[in-house]
Amino acid sequence: MININLIGAGNLAHHLFRGIYNSEGVKLQQWYSRDKKRLSAFSSKTGIIHDLKALQQADLTILAVSDDAIGELSSALPFDDQLVVHTSGSVSIHELDKKHRRGVFYPLQTFSKDVDVDFSHVPFCLEILEKEDLILLKKVCEAIGSPYYKINTEQRQTLHLAAVFVNNFTNQLYRIGHEITDIKNINFDILKPLILETAKKVQEVSPYMAQTGPAKRYDKKTIKRHLKLLDNPLHKELYELLTQSIQQTHGRKKL
Ligand SMILES: NC(=O)c1ccc[n+]([C@@H]2O[C@H](COP(=O)([O-])OP(=O)(O)OC[C@H]3O[C@@H](n4cnc5c(N)ncnc54)[C@H](OP(=O)(O)O)[C@@H]3O)[C@@H](O)[C@H]2O)c1
Image (cartoon, rainbow, N blue to C red):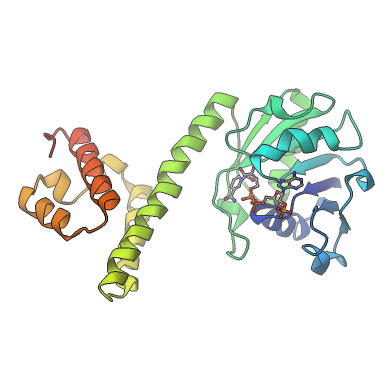
């Protein structure tokens, strides 16, 4: 049995709790939150603590906290020489206090507390400083049913950068689409099959092959009409920039 401590009570921590709690071979020993009310509903399921001094040694301590708090919290853990990992895509492994055996356990997926996630669709990017620690991290992934990849810092930070484009920026574009339809009282649901199909298509062909639309076709009149319809100057700028980016990719001239 692998004993695990979980630090933090945000979006990712809640999903990690569910993943660990529902799996064989791993056990959540203690779960720390600085907020006293936050985890009260879980006190019958694991040891909830609000004071780091009460944290006991475990086979693995996972810091699922804001990126900027990783260094400070790793130093505040009341033990050393244990395996301590953070879950960030961009923070260096060396931000963890070197009194620990250090690692990174980065799940490349988007987590919101109340939206279910299937751990078989959560690839973990694993980074370690000592070879034997990789064995334990792999076992945790296998227990919760997740695929895993051993990667280095540069690869992880590159993946995180790409993830910002394919997830955060794409989602902001959904948001702009939502605003544009809302203003005209049009139901955003009509666009949802297109959103699904866009994500599905890149599972089959490359993003290069999947591209369609007025920018790629260089339909100048349609592009002009769209720009005229946009009131928000930032949305106009984004439309122009993305159009240029598509045309550059597909060998077209600028707008
Ligand atoms: N969410 C995702 O989609 C996702 C995906 C992959 C990786 N990650 C990584 O997972 C980590 C957590 O992200 P998240 O989305 O779960 O963040 P989140 O929902 O904002 O939760 C952050 C947690 O950190 C705690 N925290 C922050 N500063 C602290 C401090 N000084 N002492 C104690 N606790 C502190 C917060 O406590 P309070 O509640 O008291 O403020 C909160 O429980 C980050 O490193 C992030 O890069 C997130």
